[in-house]
Length: 328
Image (cartoon, rainbow, N blue to C red; front, side, top):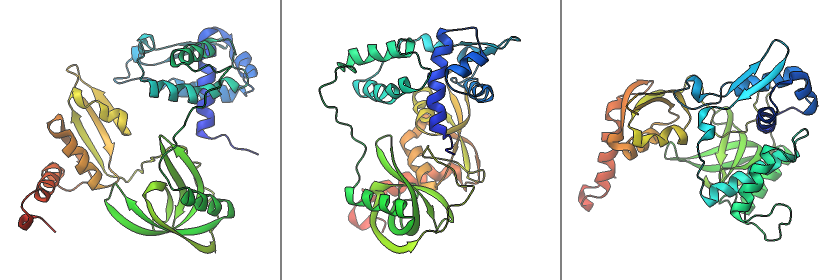
């Protein structure tokens, strides 16, 4: 029996919500039947919609789902949905390509709001979805074809490989024996989801950071029963260090670029957000990049957080000093 992944469920939610918005007051049983769902599955999906919103997550910034005593469901979109959406051509094409598949989900109205919105977007981009004749080049990321093929073969055969891998977060090269499970593209890069013997756990590696790859010619151990079907790239652990930053309004991009916890925005636009730190070099680079636009207000599991940015900046400056003064 096939298992519904998180991405499958998200596509389903994105198809169901516009239909309910356009058809308020329909019974839960009718909506579930239309989309081929059990009523319990639909209610679980609608429970996720309750949490969609923007900081500071006040009532006007959240999607409102109402189910009355007679089982009639209505969805009211948050205020930010009424704001004009400005997209670059690249963003528009990415949105069109990723959203077009939603129309194939059973129950989706082919003439509904979603279809009309995609048609308008396609027209603005000069893409005719019904009579497309011009090819569109889709770049899935820089990775050697031979490495991708080798990883796919290992995943299909259930065998292990050895990789020399550069970790950007830790700024270090390591050699690891891994058992590839899945090779996939996400946000312009290729990744391999694998079991790593060095870490004794499942990990995701960016393929273009694999310096070399060797077949170990041995079968992989059985995949653990509790292994996740990973659809995202980053999954923080409870024991990962945390750092809480106070971000000036011009540094608000941080909460969109990195997974954050407990995001709060003050009346002055200053944002407080907690980030998971998987490796100290990554945090150092982020603090140097932000400069005076960020300040550490709390940390857990990080030694001398106040001196991280200063120490990193001094090491960078040393590399640009006279040859005799450079650090090894």
